[in-house]
Structures are given as structure tokens and as C-alpha cells.
Image (cartoon, rainbow, N blue to C red; front, top):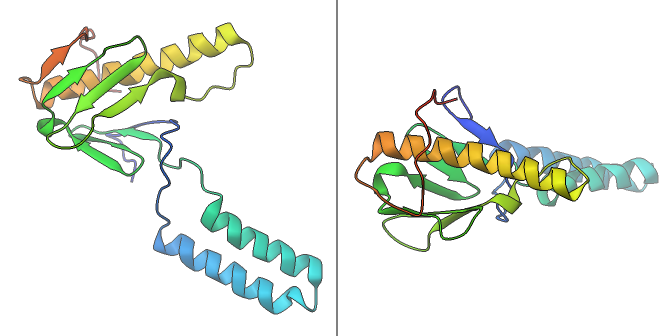
Length: 162
């Protein structure tokens, strides 16, 4: 799903994504094999059942934040740039994208994961990821819908879309 035109960022959006048909079939296969072998080879059967459960419930934010040329995907939310009415930033590290209906899609700096352990490095890394993702979103919004109202947002310098 993430082709050449999509920029993909790890982002903890907090929504559960639905499992694909292939993933459901794999989980069902592991469950069936686990139940069949559970009574004969207890440890193997238990392990197969656990793998099947992990396939269904152990999913994290698989497709975090995918920024495409015409739309972005965040969890279960797809937002077309041409349907945006306003882009706002009321606080530092927050970008709100207001669509035609419903609550705004909020992109927050603190939801970008990092491998850093020290507080200053965590802040610096999440800030860099947020700035890069929000600059790309703003460039693509400006390219697709130049009449969108920008509130509290400074436009990034024009660069390549990568």
C-alpha cells in the first residue's frame, strides 16, 4: 500500500486497524493447528494458539502516518487534501487538519516514537520527526488545495516531496 509516492512515518495514532483477510486466515490456521496439537504436544499447541492470538490482537499501529500526494492515512482515517477547510496549529507540536465533516485530525509531536532514552534527545528526535512530517503535509496541502485557510502555521520552504 505504501508506494513510492507515500512517505510513511511511525506514529502512535491510538486506533486499532482492521486485520486483512490474509492475516485472518493465518490466525485461523495457527488456532486450528494449535487446537489439534494441544492434547498431543502441549507446548507446541500452546505456542501455536499464542501465535494465532498475536496475529489478531497483538497488532500495533502498523500503518502509522502515511502521507500521499493527494491524501493522508492515519490509522483508520483517510483525509483528502482537497476536502480540507482549515489547517491550524494552536500549540507547539500540534497540527490540526479540519475536514469537511467531523472532528479534526490532530497530528501531535509526542506520538512520534523514538529510540532515544534521555529526555532531551527524545524531545529533539520527536520534534525533528514532527517538523519533517508536518512540513511535508503542508507542502502537499498547498499543492492540492491552495485556498485552504492556514491558522498559526508557517509554510515550509519549497523542497522535493520526499
